[in-house]
Length: 88
Image (cartoon, rainbow, N blue to C red; front, side):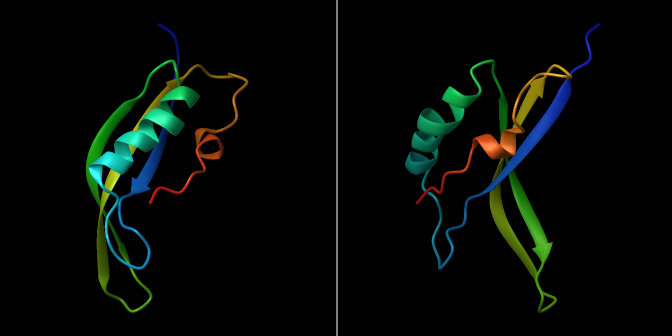
């Protein structure tokens, strides 16, 4: 049995100032920026994120979670540094 390390990336689908990232824009982002950076594979699922804002109200946002499984000691830059692209 080999030990592996899981990295999870969380992507909110809300656009600052209003609106949502469309399914088409998300698919293009995956195709152009995510899949080429992680050719060994990944798992994706839809989620609902929430947090408490400074005002005390609970904010919610549709979210996509991407999980990568990598071998320990892999000479890799952390995943969060490899995907720094804004989708709109």
